[in-house]
Image (cartoon, rainbow, N blue to C red; front, top):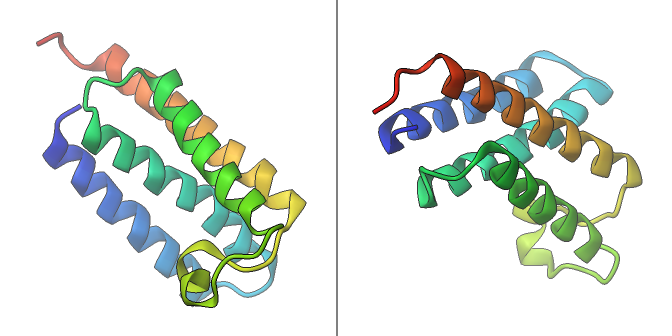
Length: 117
């Protein structure tokens, strides 16, 4: 997947996150935000390594999301709360995995339909 296409998809992911937060109340924006956060990390992985296999990008993005969430158990500096959060929430781990799985499926399907080259 090309870097410009990956960057465009990342912009769409961020836009989706902002729209969800602006339109809905309750748990939906939080759940969507968790999955989209991991999807954005997936995009960063692909920007760094455009040739990354979907399973590897999913593992890295999910792993980084989990690591950030688990770091909240030890306390994250307050200045980083807007980016990394401040409170550990076990259900977030599930939604990070859902976001990574959605990216893995979408990326795999994209690679199967795209012509070689």
